[in-house]
Image (cartoon, rainbow, N blue to C red; front, side, top):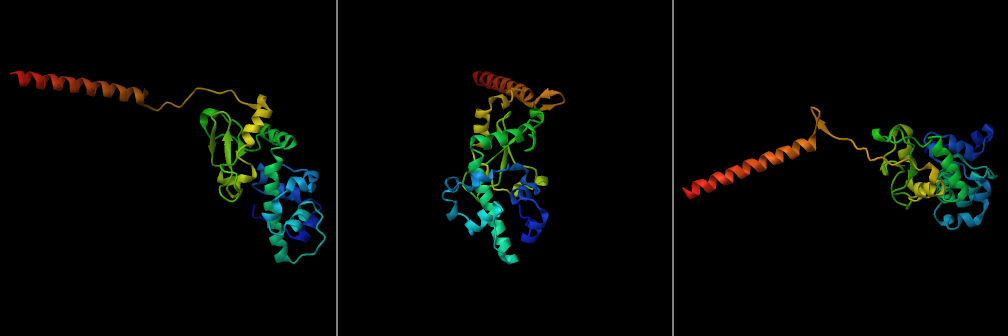
Length: 226
């Protein structure tokens, strides 16, 4: 997320800013937002107060930036563009088209797999713990065990704001595409010692303790009667 490209490098690469952004390590979680969606001011309502150099950031994202900016100014605008794209992405992924794109990435397991052994490599979906930007990093939701996990540090996902994916994404996606909902399993890991279930051993110990206590009380009563 912290990687930057100069104005000159971007121009020489012949690629769009969005394609460049999506190609950066860690940004595999994002989908491509349609330029038409970005250019519709209604979709971006209110974001101008949240992002510095808002208009320059919009122009950079849509490859319409005509000004020649000094390198230090370019870096500031580029950071604003990444922030703005994330905020736009949070809105886009809740639209029908955005959910469809995220569903395709989910089916291709591009978001990763659940680290829980008993989930058997179940694909996961990005999710936020809170919708407020700048508070918590993105997490991964497993629809099989219905729990959330920290993403792998190897993927650099910890640098990504969870708010760019919202708290609603996994649940809306699975409602819209119920065929993607995995079969729930009741199988749970059972802790054992020497092949015996720990809770079974504990239960047996409790019975033995209760039996010993009963015998001790009975003995005390007999001593008292004597």
